[in-house]
Image 1 (cartoon, rainbow, N blue to C red):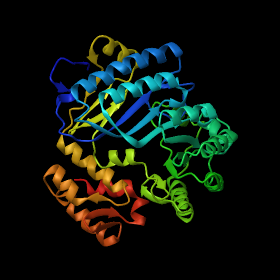
Image 2: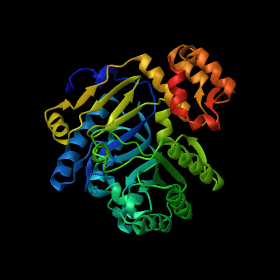
Image 3: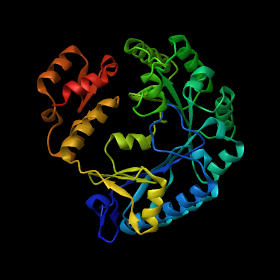
Image 4: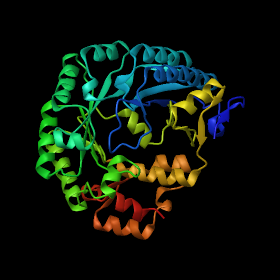
Length: 399
């Protein structure tokens, strides 16, 4: 569904006067050199001419959003550039877009500004250009230090690329950066994961995203599994890997603040926390999602359709028609993923009812009695053992 821009409301029926609510900006850079076997995010093969057309359309989208949300009413508190492979971008194009963003909105000085990078893309020149644009939080998709696993994932980087990327980041005095590591990969053993974690911890990153592999439908990896060429590891081994990884990260001084997110004190990703807490965010670029004043909408997952819509004076959006019930379920699911849990008062203020009224009371009482769920100082959170079966607990709690 492509919506026109002539109406006095934002996409999805959101009022143009958001009453001084701060928000985050996510930019989806859709291009990659190759498509990883496990990835189900929208992406397109990199082409310089397509990149230029993408940025031309992005400038239009950013300007239109700014016209609806005057800069003195909308304050940007964090920026995250994801993809795709944002480290492929032409820096002059990115700089021009940032100038437009600052022209349309109030971008706080010194805000958290993240950008994703493939390790093989990282150079001194690239990092210096980030510094010039006030990008202060690069992240690196390391995923593994084992060549066989990188090949399975269709990653292009080598082990030395990951080490070099972090070395250069430290040499250029970035105080904040993130690293991604995946576990529960086919062919991966506990010893291989332990080696991956040891090598990662030697790099001493401020932030670690420790993800369990999900074999998504319609991906090349899913097709390999379907025909029997690749065998997923079993759930017990995946759980043991997660438990062991959590313990090793804790021993190294990282605290888990979300199921898959570990940080040294003060280096939690504020942008992602804003998602989990239900704050507003504006997504720009093909397939980017937005959440504004309780309404969801998403841009079309096609560079061609995205560009064509904006060239024709239309928003390239698909409106999410879900309502408050879906938002409450989402708030519970995301809240339980965070170590501190669901904020009872914030939930009641947002939805006008107590979170306990939205839970299966029998299951809640059983899980509190078993020690998996802890009512604690205004929050409902999972215990350490609860985190290891978080998905099952969430399923049981939701009515």
